[in-house]
Length: 271
Image (cartoon, rainbow, N blue to C red):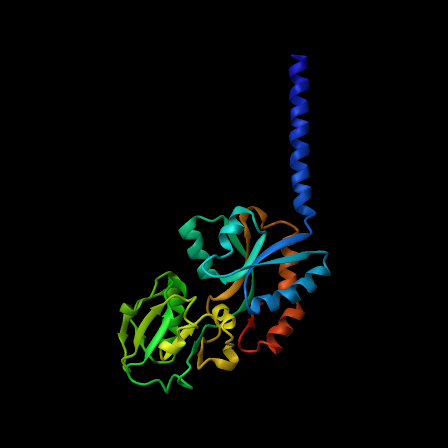
């Protein structure tokens, strides 16, 4: 009996030591692997790295492109955080895949823009113009909403995208200019601009194609709404000491100045 108690005590001590060591390792974490999209976010993260360094935090960017995004790797623990998406997209990913990840702060807004190689404004689009929009739910919603905002189309009453409804071209109830909506994979929309009259393109893809909203778009998403980008982490890490350090780096004055000077109108502070 005495031996069993000693054995139990030894096992308990070992378990406590392992737990304490793991907790200390998280608390003392000084290097963060951060998943981002390519293009303008790489510029932003360069500034974030400098701000984070003041707090003893090293930020190592991991760039994802194409259809591979940074949510699966975050959920699996291959990276520590990501900063490439807005909350509606994240919510859709969590619903679809059951990811145990959460948003912890907003960073910037990257308004969706409408671009054209043929026309200088939405008003100049001809009757029966072909407009390319992204084929995924979230960005299709954004594209149809921006076209409605500028009076190109009208969506059916009762459609509540903020509540979780998804809009499709079938929800268009008024189309006075008879525009034709063509869904195109967001990854090739930039390359498809020559084949359509205009295209609604998210900032990440536009920037990788050499387009900037403030310089090149013929219309831009109005400010506000739910589409500010967020930092996401695993649920179990949301209260780790490195998280507020990463947030402060993203929400630093240096990042604000970069957005307001270099990317004014293309990227906007959301903090």
